[in-house]
Length: 167
Image 1 (tube, rainbow, N blue to C red):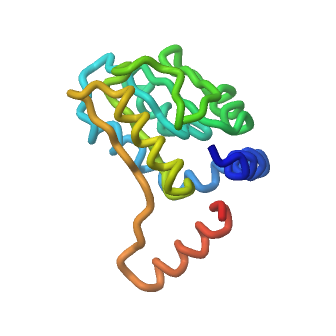
Image 2 (tube, helix red, strand yellow; image 1 turned 45 degrees about the vertical axis):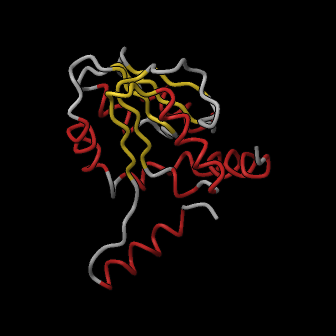
Image 3 (tube, rainbow, N blue to C red; image 1 turned 90 degrees about the horizontal axis):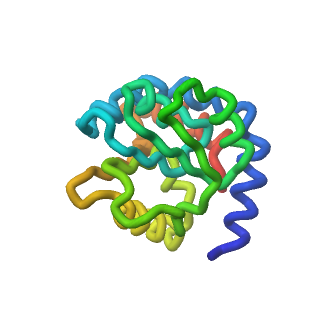
């Protein structure tokens, strides 16, 4: 895989980890909506790909889903583990292009605000892995940015995101 990309991601999120919660202020309201959207049955097994600080994983955990969050940057996962109050939430350092899970391990797989950062070849492998580990009767949810309707809000949002998003 592209070692330059992996090296960049580890360094970038090492620096960003301590202030990443600020970005969540703009999307926190969406976390529960993502859980609602899945309409998963109680006790479902959920995977949160590129979990970062675990905010989406916690939204699933507080509703009694069994959640595993995975990501590459240890600094982000350290924050997720430090903030984890849920016995049903676990976090692991793992490459989403080669997940350490058996086929059909999850009822729901989710990736929030992650795929846009990935080069196409990496993104494609991550999506293929999500399909592999998710039950064919399950659901895969991709959450990402969209530009806002009004020009001024779009401009402000775009420049804010550029402050912390990777190249």
